Length: 284
Image (tube, rainbow, N blue to C red):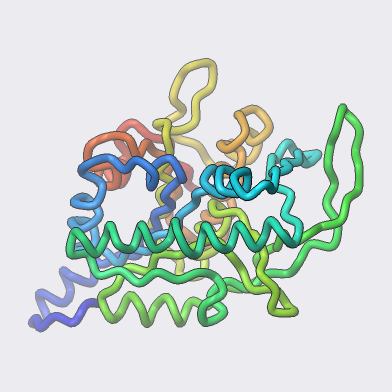
């Protein structure tokens, strides 16, 4: 709760509205944010505790290419596309995510007088992960077992750290780089990092703001799904959306009230998503 003075009646009202909302900002959204995004975020943060988790993988690829490090992407047997992260790549990934992307977003929030604290999964052991030993990649219809590189499976979220930051009235802005068992940097998927953060704090809602209004099937927006339906849809949607659906399923199973996939390219995107307007809502 924020540092406010109120009587018992006011306290009851505030406790009802001060829910935890986790918002995942996709790379397209933070690169060219909608003009009303930060005002909407400021308004939302006066009513709820807000945690931001951001992506920005396209910027990692662009900067890696400029540095002469061509990026490799693999597809799992389940149809999940991901970046192959070797040692050089994880250094570039950390530099862009924890440096450029995270600090530009914090500066944008502070410019709008929104108290923000930028951090990554490395800080305070916020996101601890286990380094994957092997990965299975599908190439030309055949499965190959390859070294796991510096990709991590999230094992623990430091919820106490996030709670302390929220209690002091700041919005945590989290970059998806995790700390491994040997204290190495690990690449973790930003959507799933957001899901685990929301799950740890039992957030009321997690909102994935992306460049589309939600999940489409045969050009029609699916407005509501149960987690079983969402899970079965992961192989039927395109690259990018399959991770969001998986993250939605994980978040709801960890106790999050609802998961929403919505467009960040509209006016007041967070307010519209929370009102379940023109978006996809996944519930238990």
